[in-house]
Image (cartoon, rainbow, N blue to C red):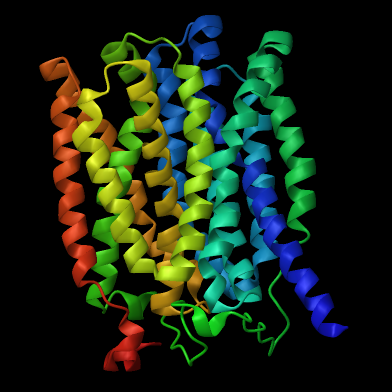
Length: 412
């Protein structure tokens, strides 16, 4: 009976993590909010872009702090803090139309809140399940962020149409405060001494076996060359995905003369989520590095072909592949961090690695912007991204788990 009860709790924590990520995915409604700020409040495009840009940077930086805090104080407190700050930033944004203040309220407070919550839902879920299921667990939890845009963007559009931008901020804030904070109550670590049950099909799997794993802290991981391999691969591969995500509507219009960008954004969200779950499940069966190499190859081929997508069918195929490729990364790199460095200090360790994602948010989009302004097309950006992905593939082929070497005595 006790085992069944604990198994039920494990799935409760896993689904609660998914629910929190679905709730804090408000960031994916910014394109709709930006349009209203420009049209209704007469903001410039640069003013309307700044809160989102700041929120992305703060989100990435917050993971450095939030991961360590949840490792020390437990995940529930940090997730609750994150949902409260996410909501508070939105509520404060409803009382002003000043661009500088909204950079503070939305960009810093909401962005930081998202970082706190996002950093603290995956670590406890991983601790409830056997290491052989790391990919599945991570994929399910992080898929919430990928799926959020499917509901949050149309709901935000409807709210703005009915109530205006200020009341929309308020409604979204109250929604997150009630729903997000409520779901966060279910997030918790397993009891002391808890050992997850080994899967029945373990003998036929290439997944990590049940063996002692050294737990590194962030000081330990930066002493291993594998950390830098992971960091470089994460930064280069994410930059390709973020370049497509940030410019998808414009690419569709310019390359294929197709103005159905809203359809592609929804399609990308679906395949983004499928990539997170699918890559997680696949990596549990064939191994994390093999799966990563396959994903990098898919991304590279897609980048090489993207300039040839000059009709709706081509752009649709490219969007699906981009979604799968990018989404897979957000499942694989957390799982790799847990495989390589243990789950005890996972929050802080992944926070350090996640800085690569923050950097990638400037590499791909800025490179694309400079190139399209200079040449009038994205073709060169695609080729450069393909080259960076080929380099990342090369790194993946020489990356080994430090837990399999004699250097695990470097763990803290």
